[in-house]
Length: 396
Image (cartoon, rainbow, N blue to C red):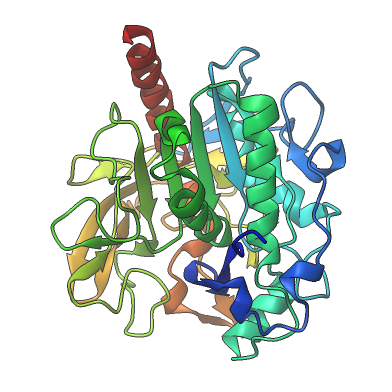
């Protein structure tokens, strides 16, 4: 009998506690769950060479400080030299604790918001998986840890990953991309399926966003991962980019879900995609132009005064946003500064807070738009990392 597969309990969106399957106490035992067949096209939201969730309108309106609008088109690459493998966050509105394998508007929307734009750099792979749903998440936050299979989402992603490695990878470099629950699953995948194995040499980077990766204080590796360090330059490969974003004027509270760890000798890792080497940098955000759903509703805002009609799905706001990693009494997190100019016609604020009953949930920060805030920076980093990785491969 083979050793039991380990699985991750996603108690909150990006907090992981891994236990042996022998300790499973949920009403749906992992051994009883039928495994997905990832040779079936419908098991994937995105795969190369087909019309799917990743083939979507990414046109952007750039709004300058003087209120001038400029339209930016997007075109992916047909011959990208590397792959990107994406695991999406908690978005499913299915009424059960675990989602089904039928993509709804929420799964397709998060692909458009977070992943499809990487088509400029990568061949895109995004499996469907039976994630902890929003119903299940609300139950866990209320202390109810029953009614869902804690192993199901991770085991699905591990099966999809192993199918991809066997049938699609062909020794190509790969970037792992996740947010929130997706990051938590990829964290465990790296620790159990990648670190210390030959496939680690193909890891270009892991973008584990909206998550809490542990590192020893004043170190870049040695906490969550044994040998995968934090990225400190765009030309570095085999490393991790991770952060949780908070407004500069709304830092993590004592009960924050991100930016803090319990271990006194460790800290939550933060890598600033706008300045990996440290300090502050300008964010190249791709924000939703209108009201959208990403686990919670993000309301539409007026981008200019007086309002201008914007008919693209995305907006960029060059110069409005900057970021730096901070480590203080509030935690370790990516501090988002809005460089408002009240006298100009462009908006002086952005949407993205988690709001419940009309009140901002400070402990979540800008979790809903963690990826959108720095998407342009991340794309640029992946492009540079890809070139560095390919140079190393050619020199061998």
